[in-house]
Image (cartoon, rainbow, N blue to C red):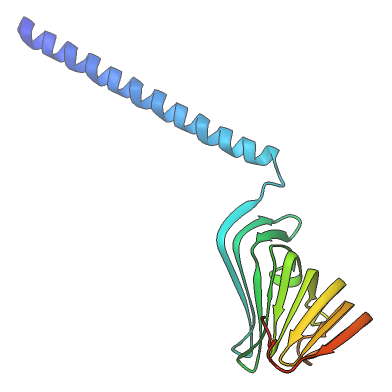
Length: 195
């Protein structure tokens, strides 16, 4: 072989060797980075999943029973709970919307894949058929199918305003109870729901 051909073969082997070494180094670095991320996640077992535009529904007999939306959710899988921002829960009966529950922040508790309870706080508002309820804290309990508010409550209806505390709303039965400090003001209808 000629000297020029030998040089070409030598240069080709050197370039190929450098390319192979570069590939191995890049592959090793990528694996180390991936392993480091996995190790970091294992060191923080309670790390939460963050979800934007959270949305969950419950169907019963092919119809909506309730719908839950939130601007953001932080889900803790091991504890089966979530913290949500700007949540809104809508209750349905026979396919019709019956009530809407909103808050500034909320905590959800799950039983497997089923929603067990929802606790809302901040500016909590329940919009029902012809009435609006305002309070600072409200909880929905799935097993009992009720919404409770332990503190002060203001209810505005078509022709009345009711103030009280310790409210309970039986969602399916569409029955509301105030247990303490109840004051009712009857209006002429100009202060309808939402005003």
